Amino acid sequence: MDLGSDSHTDSAEPSNDKKSTGGQLSIKLLEDLPNELASQLLNAGFGSLKDIVIDGPNALSTRSGISKDDSLFIYNQAISFLESIGIVEKRFVRATALYDRRKKISKISTGSKNFDNLLGGGIEANAITEVYGEFGTGKTQLCHTVCVTVQLDQNHGGLNGGALYIDTENTFRPERIAAISSLRNQDPSVILDNIIVAKAFSSSHLELILSESSKIIDSHNIKLIILDSAIALYRSEFLGLSSLAIRQQRLNKLIHTLMRIAQTHQIVVLVTNQVQSTPDTGFGNISFKAAGGNIFAHSSTYRVFLRKSNRNRIARMVDSPNHPESEIVFTVDESGVIDPA
Image: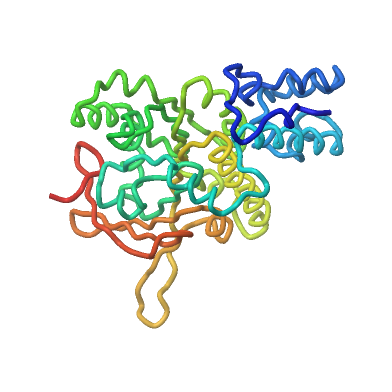
């Protein structure tokens, strides 16, 4: 089976036909597959080559009933095609090419210049940015603010796109979006209309939402996915040491699915996380670390810790492949996340 990748080069312009750009299943893929396999793919909900790459060969086999060997072959062909038209990174590429591409990478403003500077210009696409902290430190307020800023043009810190807000703790408030929009001179009705909200009621429901997100991303010009919060449902469902291993396996799959969505669709992914307290040995104080253990620690691209400081908030870059560990001050008012006066 050949998806015609040899006919695409680095300099080739992607076709306007969505069926040849991975937006929908490639006609060539369907033609080369036996009718039974093609039907199994479509019936299982795989509407695009991106879906195949995001789920991976094992999930492809499990969901569709296609054998593991055939699933691996289909997956490899799909990712080769998306590589050939520049949707995903090629397997072998010069560092200079990566450097040039990263200079053009998309970012969205947090609403605060201080916070943007901490992140090197804003929240980065093709990556997972995790913010964690106690309640009231500004995590959800940041999420509401960037739902507005992502819709601005690039000259004003946006990407001219919509937001997909996955709510696991019933914290999304449309009236908060309306207030932030109005105070930032945006039309609340337009801003709200460009935000798709998905409420997840269980960890399995959350995973189902992510598996169906590609069609929402493509059909609604989504440039930002928010998951608020990532671990809440798993902490409530998987209790005790006996269920810890399966919880971590599920979290591992979740965070890597989010990463593949970010890279395949080239969008921003912002994840909030809870904290757990740990005794600070020798001082009698309590310190906090992000929940989720090493799964989140190793998988998030950028990790930012938020804490209160009187009326302001402090954001500290905890982990980044290219930023130094540093802190900034921001605050939250009726217009969302801003710099202190």
